[in-house]
Image (cartoon, rainbow, N blue to C red; front, side, top):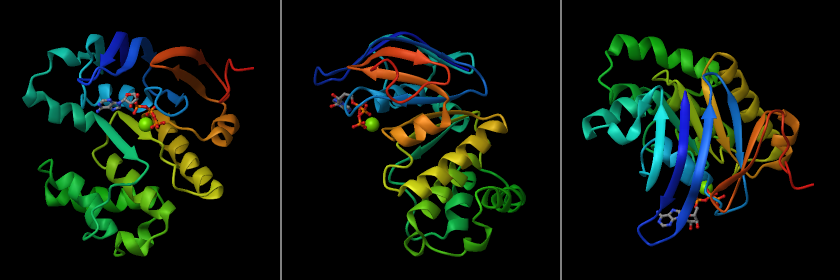
Length: 229
Ligand SMILES: Nc1ncnc2c1ncn2[C@@H]1O[C@H](COP(=O)(O)OP(=O)(O)OP(=O)(O)O)[C@@H](O)[C@H]1O
Ligand SMILES: [Mg+2]
């Protein structure tokens, strides 16, 4: 589903964010990307959405080499790849319903499909009863659920989460992870970049560790401190 072949990334200012990263993520996998701050987690995720282009090597998503994409192909890539961030990035002047619906409407979806899919997504994340609320009326966990519903409404193959529990308390973080695991169980490939040791250690999923832009460890049923003793 996702393949990195010897990917290196040097930003224009000369910072080397990734070095010779090779990684294969199969369809339907759930993977934690760990590593302390500045080690390259977000940069790796941005290669998958083609927000950044590697300096060397190749990234493939769903069988497609991203270096060969033309600008007109990028919206199709972005529809395959949902993204969830630490700070939710919701539209503050839109309700929960409208935030989720908007993600569909910008792809040109018919209103019949919007009316069918939005409630289904809100149900799945447990927010059907808050659909008329605005983001400022929601808890952090509810805002993150809204963001997850929004990123899933286009039915992406892959869900990338960059520190999705960074602003949440431990209990709420656990609930968000349970939700992501449920989404994964339905077939979506999920990658979660995180510092949240408690969650990684509890879930015992595949753990890939980045140190200084290099993959130092890759373990099935790993722990946060994989390879660090
Ligand atoms: N747009 C950019 N231009 C230049 N350097 C960048 C850019 N984005 C990130 N970097 C640098 O690349 C390196 C990797 O950053 P990245 O954001 O991928 O780390 P991270 O593991 O996600 O860190 P964090 O846990 O703090 O989110 C860092 O040295 C960072 O300063
Ligand atoms: Mg980051």
